[in-house]
Length: 159
Image (cartoon, rainbow, N blue to C red; front, side, top):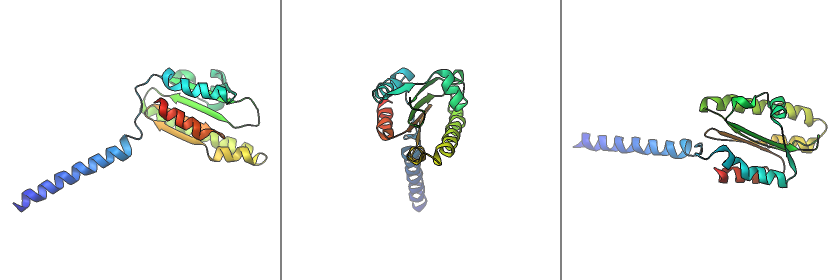
């Protein structure tokens, strides 16, 4: 009788641990079944309202060192002003295996720009220090600038 109760306690404890794992680690990083166009459109609409310009595929590759053909989808909006770091980036990778590599490239660019802007434009450097990278499944999202939180909300709602 005691053995059976002990087994029941172990079973339920293990089940609870699995549920907690799912709640805290799997669900928040889950992706979306929505197409790239559906996810990107609300972000693009808001970026245009903020007078951010769509960056060409060549400009994206030059900035991040990633070729657009290696990705499922990419959209980069940036400030038209040379001395502004304001930027909104949405990437969809083909597989989850690409996520870390792409995220590292994004973090490298942020670090590089922080070094460039840190000495002479501290207000822009502050935006870079507060840059947010969010990964949801195969989607990677970056927001830099005064409206970063608003863009993040739009991104999360679009999933």
